[in-house]
Length: 244
Image 1 (cartoon, rainbow, N blue to C red):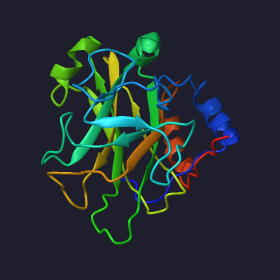
Image 2 (cartoon, rainbow, N blue to C red):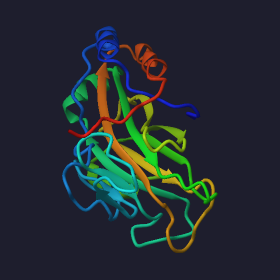
Image 3 (cartoon, rainbow, N blue to C red):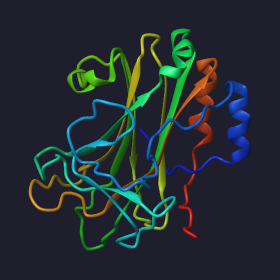
Image 4 (cartoon, rainbow, N blue to C red):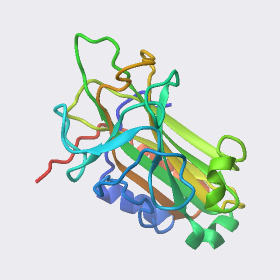
């Protein structure tokens, strides 16, 4: 569980680690920066390349928070796709197509690395501002259309990382998770979420201004032991990119 700030790794460090673990592959996320304005609220995804989950929306700068990259970001709204509930998490999912890396995965060398940036509002007079975000990856066998029925029951493996955000709205904080994929993996689901860890609102506004941006997912072929270098190198403070 991450309790300190995280930052962007320098380009030179990424190159060095990529060279050690094998060639770092291109980002496999679709709309990881939320620059395409689409509907993200709905039932769990059953195909590749789109976001679905609890009530969220894609927005531009608001509440004195500017997107980490580009001109749009994701806002978490409610803990269900229809509105507020007694649940504590607003979750958004995407299924990642890893079929082009089948041989690497079957050989036991399919290490994945996923990350996302998070930010939130701060109201000094309101003690009910929730602070927790998280990212998780989940490996499954079978066709991607089976994800809704397999979720929470049949994953081959999973990893999650939580982040407790600070009150600085000028900075975005990064959470990262990595995992060696089981050799039977056919597809991977990635989840990002905001959690009501301070006060569980069951009516009205559940998240006053909680955001995600810059979600990435990569497969790094190579010995899995080298992937452990990544989390250590990523510790620090992440500052948002200025919009031109």
